[in-house]
Image (tube, rainbow, N blue to C red; front, top):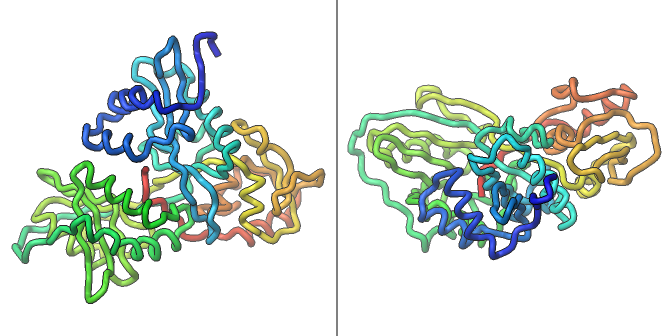
Length: 367
C-alpha cells in the first residue's frame, strides 16, 4: 500500500464524505440519502480508504441477526460498496474488503450478506450467491375496478407478523428483524416515495411496498401468507392502474404463467468472517473434518471439526470458505460445487452432503 493510502474504520466525522461518495457512485435522491445517513450509518461497522485526506473508496455495514437453517447468527448487511469513478481499477476494493472482513470478525460478526447489482464483482473476495429472487413482470389494462388505499405509517406495525412468519423465520439467509428494525425498513421505502398496500380478509394476509413511476411500478418487497400471493399480485395490478409492474418475490412462490413473465436469478451473496463460530453455532452433527482455505481472513484457514474446532486430523474434503458457506446456508450442495471440492474421503464427502441438504434461501433486504 502506498504511504499516503490509509485503510481504516470510519468515524462519525466521515459521514459527509461517505454521503458525497454515495451520491457520486449511486445517484440516489437527496431524500433517500438524508434518511439513510440519519438511520443506517454505523461508523464502527464501516470501512474506508483514504488518500491525501480524501475518502476514495468505502463500504458500510449494518449489524443484523441472520437466519441460517433455523439458527440465528450475528451478521452484518453490507451496502454502499463503492470507489470514486476517477479512482477505480487501482485495487482499492480488495484492500477495503480484506480490512472489513477481518474487522467484522474482531467485532464478533460471523458472516456478511448483501444484495449487489453485479454479483460477480464480489467473487474475487469469496462472496458467492446464497439466495435467489423471483422477478415477476406483467401489465394489465386499467379496468377501473376501484382505488387502492395506501397504508399509513401508524399501521405499519400490523405488517410485522407477516414478515416474521413468511421471511424472517422461513428462509435461510434472511434478516431476522426485530419489530423496530422492520419499521425502520418501512421508513426506508417511504423516504424515497414508496407506498404500501395490504391484503386482508379479516386479518392481515399480505403487504407490498412499491414505487409508482410514470410508466411502471417497481415493487421491491411483496410478502404474503401461503395461498395469498396471487391475490396480492392482483392488488398490485390494481394499484398500477395499467402500468407495467415489476415485483420481487421469494424464489419458491408459485405465480400462474398467465399473470405475466417470471425470471429467477441469484440476488444475494455472503462471505465468511468466522467459519469456526459458524460451524459451532450451526450444531451440525458430523464426525468428519473439512479443510478450509480463505485468502481474505487468515484465521479461516485450516482443518475444522463440525463443532468449530481447529484440528490436526485428516479432512474428508477441502473447499474454499465462500463456497462452503453457500453449502452451509443451503443454497447449493457439495455436488453443485464439485469443481471447487477436493475429496479425500468419499464416505466423508457423502456424509457431509447428506447432513447439509439444500433448503429455501432468500434475502429480501438491501439495507
